[in-house]
Amino acid sequence: MEVADRQFQSEPFEKICPLVQVDLFGQNNKASSVQCGENSTFVLTESGQLYSFGKTLGGRIGHKKLLPTKILDNVDSVTTGARHSFAFNKQQNKLYSWGFNLYGQANPSISGDITTPQIIQQLP
Image (cartoon, rainbow, N blue to C red; front, top):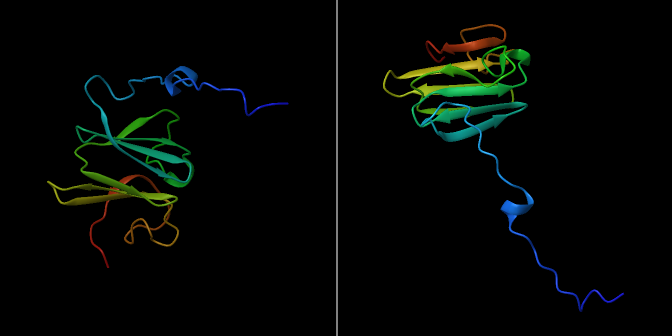
């Protein structure tokens, strides 16, 4: 068995695994960033719309639908923990949170899980 004498040619990645473009967010509304938590994904578009999809347990995606769903507009940034998330609207100076909140880690002024984005009124 003489493997050393053989020359292997590799195929371009695009030929082996073609990329498929899916228009989830509407024409001319491109994703600008993606954040992932435990079983959850958040996509922020260039126009400031925030979409989420994944496991709905504990409110971690901000809605109860199975498909990617817009949960906020005018978002400048988003960050996620394993089971809770935050979004910031710079113009209005508003911080939103949602998700698993047993210990107040998502929003200290709300008890229990937060199933839709809520404004954090004040920090302790």
